[in-house]
Length: 141
Image (cartoon, rainbow, N blue to C red; front, side, top):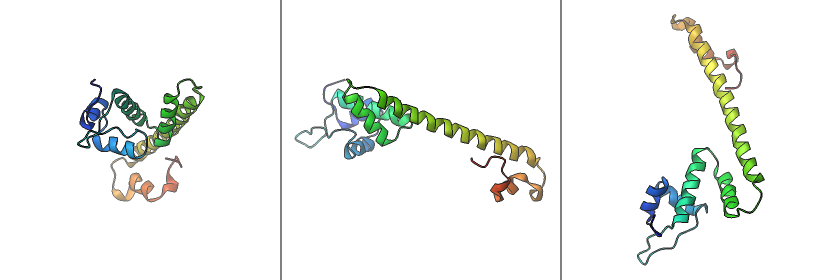
């Protein structure tokens, strides 16, 4: 990659959309880049790597606060990785909770569909359960 690139090229190289790059600058995840005489932003290879890091962290579901901490850790590589481990472990716990919730939801929907048996709406278990959450097998979904 060339030393200095425009915001459009940084977006293409990092996979982060131009408005999102501007947003990351506004909230301090990405330092404001130098500008040309015509006021165009110029990004270097480090900026593009940082944008790629942020994009990947967002794809994994990390919140902005966690990404900010991870970036700080990345900027100071000599320190312990305990904080990064904690952040990743917290995300893993969230994902496992989400999976459990989705599995409960799946089981509830499968039961509703199986018990409906394509009868009449008056006997439809889907409508009955949707009308009364108390009739659900799984309370948390």
